[in-house]
Length: 475
Image (cartoon, rainbow, N blue to C red; front, side, top):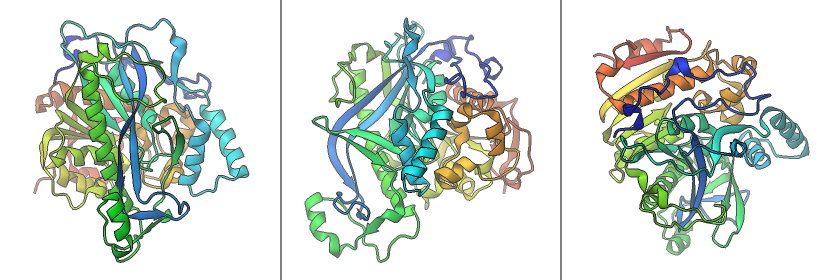
């Protein structure tokens, strides 16, 4: 799949990225400008879908709630090349629902959101990120592609645990500024801090972080009546799960269903068809110009658990992707791996990820791809657990690929272990992704330093911000 990048030599690379203040977004209240050749627009879409249920558990804290996980809507944000905006004051807000998001983070940290915790959390969050925006213009018109590009290629992005669709605005916006339409999914599977769902009829509800310890799994015989009513496949569990693995497997199935509905919706949009939007999507939106996008073979991307979805979907046979790109994929959620990936695969991994068990599983998964390129980003001065990771849920997500370190001041970043410039890390990531999509051949990586995976797991490399191509370990 070609992009506008192949037609223009003006697209900047790492050395051309805008400067970032050492204070992050503390005073500017905006993320760094995108460095591609196109202005970026952003548009939120929420659609009604047929109701589906997954899983065989009851919610202990909500005994009257429906069993398992139920979805009847899907939501995503479109990042896209836009016509030059006249009103730049309409920049998108990074956390549009700050209070509910903080409540969700408190749930993730297993802190009851009482008055004391809320007061401390709200004041801290307000001081750090209140009103922070990213440089995309809400509801700007889609730009028509230049004559050299028939249609804009489509990227689908899936966020990690503890995150949301807008927490990767740097990656999504940068790709949009280079001539891609990025579809960032908001997963309603209980892996995010908070998501507001607008159901049919305009009824709103907030869906918060779902902790595995709040779930009670019923045995098959006890649930037989409910099975008949909901037509759901239940698993006969002899004992209650002792960690989140069972829940994550259910949530992965939810994500696959969401992905299917999102791809179907984007295809209808590309045909200028109206889609059944909920009241969340403000006003009538004209999809007529959107016939210039090509979702026939999208590029599938994801971070952490979103990377798990990308790999699982690519191997399922139900989806057809031109490329698959994953950042620190949570591969242990996919064991035992039995799939085959027919698309070219790119993996970019943080230093912390490369020293864990996930990297070993990743090598097993990647060998089943039609081609595989994996890179390591050396970003930490020490291999230690970030305070942010501990707050969100230790080991669940790796913030270096998200917007988090772009917003925080450098002094905080260094305290939690990130010694490299976060904008440089994003730049290396974007440039590697673009190079992969343009060629994907070994010739494209001639100047990149290479090591085999035994050196990676030894942890002996310490050049901050360095990009390293990892070779499979020779036998």
